[in-house]
Length: 277
Image (cartoon, rainbow, N blue to C red; front, side, top):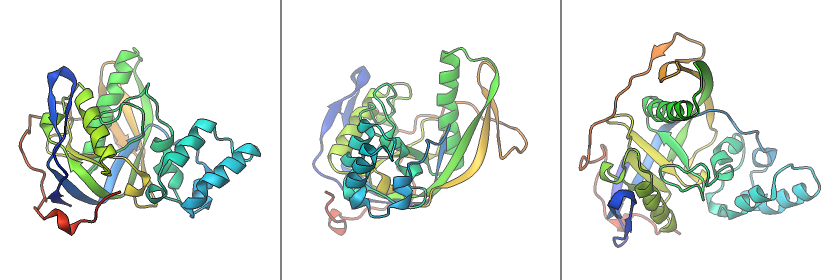
């Protein structure tokens, strides 16, 4: 479910390949009852986030525990914890899962909406979207490294997700050039928006989201299913869930949906929304 609202004055950024990115003139109030994210593994949990629900105490506790050797967390990750505004943090059960992409990111691993200088929680409105997006990237990695045929384990994560986000069109999402999306992501994040809602490039008709803050997620994050992807040496041919029957992975690129509005959106004035900080 989503609702359109007014947006601050238009800005623009020059993306890769000469594509001019027009900053959208509207935002979307995103509210997904369930979002789907597929990850290759879960980072080891940091118990601090699980046990301490007072997110204002993170900075002091993390630093104190690190100095005493109680918490084996590198100084860089302590800095990243402090960089998350108090109002954007989450604490309690499964908080470690929600925080993982915002602590473990790198410029060596850029994504569609980040150059790797900040973390992003990518998810799909449906499992099919999450499957298609992750199969594509996993296949590219396996192909580039010349991996032999094998099965790999993944985990499907589910939780409610939402926030005041930018609505991107397919025109701003070059399938194989991330520079336009990265420019849009930097603009949206610096303008105070919670993320970007966009049509899936890998699954026709599906919606995906790139969320900039842990607070966009409602805990607990459920480890819903164990998945396996079958790499046959050339492509990901099949997948299965919870050791069930193998299913063929649908392949093919979506058509260009430039100009097609996102479903379930209605126009409302900006005055109905509080100003974001």
